Length: 334
Ligand code: GDD
Ligand code: MG
Image (tube, rainbow, N blue to C red; front, top):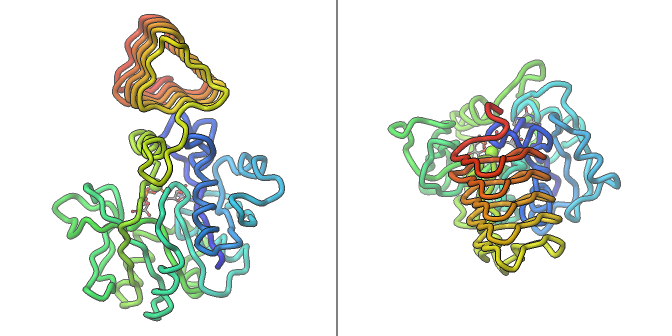
């Protein structure tokens, strides 16, 4: 199986972290998100992946100079300007010369969805496209996908308001497409697969879906970026991963509770870190509190400062000693 992985978005909701690092290159516990995505595809039987790139594409190339990642071989399709999700699929399918069924995956989704069974179901029904569905509490942030009892898609509504969401089953960002689909996507403008292509294919009765109860999370918001990592250290997805990197330093009298402390980070005596992510090389000084927040690479939280309420401290930024930061981003407005 071959796959296109969409990694060209700006990661706006994760600013300021994504000002320096594209979303799919942000670390999750011990390695970039993209490596989890590609390993899951490899386990499902995918051997070749085309990364559909745009924003900060050079950082992907630099990280994988041999064009191998997560056990799959990589090729790169770099859009001259962002073409949106369907435009990116068309561009990447042309670049890779895809002329048989192929998978498409949103590169910011961590999941154990079985792509092999999605592939098999797609070929049983003769669909033009088959979407994996996952169940969420709040469907308004996703593509909402009502189906009949066989799995034929009755409609596709991207990010509806709550009254307009007919079901909690949503697009998981994992698809199988027939090679004719890229051919019907306009090549000269931005095209959304969710707002334009899927509703049209559903109207022709060519769109099918497969429901999955497997682990699934889209890491594209601060709270889900934190949650995905807490799930890994809590053992929600198999064996629990180590929360504190081998070369991180946590002082004896520091309190680190249900948090990730990445490579080279340091938590001083008397500091408390709870339900948070302390990224590479960040420093948490004595008596500081970090609660439900993200401290970016090389950032520093000064003595006695408090960072709470899903705040994000950007790369190499500092919180002055004693300062309170609650529900904010530093730098502000980013
Ligand atoms: N190459 C390229 N070009 N990639 C893009 C572009 C583009 O112009 N725009 C977005 N992407 C990539 C993003 O980097 C991300 O990996 C993926 O496409 C999806 O974009 P998001 O911005 O993360 O979309 P979303 O999370 O709001 O919604 C999408 O995912 C949900 C599931 O997580 C939709 O597909 C929803 O229908 C779906 O439910
Ligand atoms: Mg997303």
